[in-house]
Image 1 (cartoon, rainbow, N blue to C red):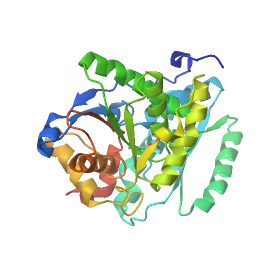
Image 2: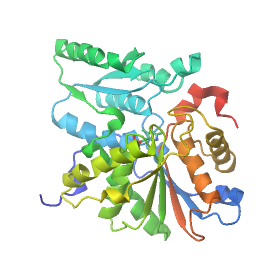
Image 3: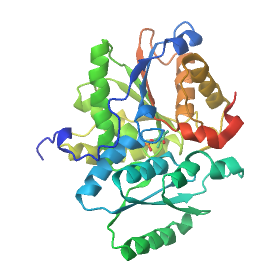
Length: 337
Ligand SMILES: *Cc1c(COP(=O)(O)O)cnc(C)c1O
């Protein structure tokens, strides 16, 4: 297959690009001697309904769906899914119907988790929401959504969980191209990238983007926030060949996939002391809001790796802030350190 330009990939045009690239000197100062130079790629500022990393994936996925005549979109997630909220917002903006099938994966049993945060925004954004207690009920809910679309005479397009597919990953190839131009202008080259990883599309896109931009030596540290390291790394690795094929390039080898799960704690969506510390640190030193489920645990990993001396003195580290801010309101004062 001949190399394909990213510009040739249809987009829905739903984000604010470029997102900012900012230096975090006050976090660095707070962490003291030996802290590497820290930068943050502000994917929380991707512009659509409080932002986040799914906007980039949806930009590509919905660009493709529109080309195929989609009238309605169906996707899946946890009850407080950021992906579901960003899909609902994208559909509103594009004039598409939106069906969200949300499963109660995190048992918090309080009103905030069930009604506030992303869940409130899904309703506000006009999505049709089906909440399930058990993943075994998903097939039935999908069938019901299919019937509603058929009754309305609309083409229903399914977007996978997390917007993760080879095509969706191209959104993060584009993100790397974007930050490469920004970091060149700022005169910095990143040695390390730290990013939260759950369905793996973001990490796979970043790895592919680094190879494409000629920076394969940059080490990407995925931080597992959903499953264990092995499961997460396998999900990332499986996406590398098909994502590269979309662009007609050679794939990144699976050995380039590194995922740590020491910051997962009790599991997906379960708060940890290190998450609370990182959320408070970024808030109080930079005015920067992380979230309890994803960027807070990735932030905890960043802090943990700095303290354990994982980065050489003088290293330049990029933290990818993937968003998730609305979930702060679903956890209430549990995010306070
Ligand atoms: C979905 C999500 C991630 C993980 O991205 P994947 O591509 O699924 O690995 C990280 N951070 C936030 C805030 C998210 O919503």
